[in-house]
Length: 48
Length: 470
Image (cartoon, rainbow over all chains, first blue to last red; front, side):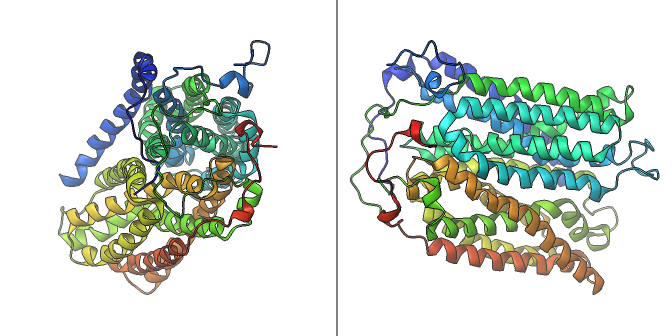
């Protein structure tokens, strides 16, 4: 067991900028999702 | 909080987060850097176009066209520079903070593409080496380590999750970089030989701009900040220190060098599979072995390579997150223990032509290769504290550079030797996998030997993170 486990939920103050965090994740998530989808399409050829 | 309005915009003091800053903004900032520099894993997509700039036909290179060996050297230079610059600039990074380091990384990585583009236009391989390999490689090294210590400081309760999320981006960068490069080269094919030079310019600009999101979003926590409600458990784990060891002292400890061997073995073995993935699966499951028309084609082999990239990415997040629960030492023992069994199993699965199982085992192996990268910063933070963990991580990455040379060398020597003996198919790769399994045994023993760092190496008295690079 790791001794540095959290003992409480993230602070409410951190949630105030939750909208910015969602946008930030979309900024990196969209290109990553595109890359993953391209990889999947290519990988399908392996099992045809 | 001190008034920082008159200090330069890139100064570390200007990046200290205000109260209420959402720490979940930091991982995407880190990912913006790692997804960009992870493009390096996809450099091979340029191999054929770069090798036929004069002839215009990849199947029939003209005299004077660059050879695959000449082109491949570009990537090798970049990886060596990655390790060297991570080691050299680690302490500078701790002193100036992540924003300045990320900006430097973006300028080097984007600028490297632009210089390489000039090299392609002039058909001067040395300019390509200098641009993408040397300048871009420095960008890789600084970029790779720039968000790591910041993430560990923001997520003391979930170090593995946080570094896993960022380093996952380096694994995923190839999945974006490869189709992007192909699309750009097709777009510019009519205006330049193979479309490579303008594609390099476009990629340099795209990546430079994309990375700016990370540069301007990243924040460091105040020295006294901790997650709300976070109380370090009193439960004792001998490997997790409450002290701090400087980068200069860390390299004097046996623990640093044991981890260096751990990373070396993990990466050398993983690169062995990645390096040969395409020819490996085509030769093992060829038409001759499977029956006419049933063998693995080049397109299917590309799919196999893509699948390995995906598991490289997923493993970085999954295994590193798991290490928060079960501990770093144990997770590496799993990488190596399970790895030995799986590496030793691969030749048998190849002999028996069990394609699906073969692919599944290879994917698990590569997921642990990625996991080994992603868990390393958290392991270092456990052993040496967060004081100069970025700089220590940078020095550890020289193991990656070494493995980048050693892994392919071992594979090519053993494979060539098997071929000379007339072995084909799975048999030609048998010794490669058995040798890699042996390397994993060495890694297992090195990890097993890791103990807590002697207190004599720790800094005396309180340390401030801002002074981390003095």
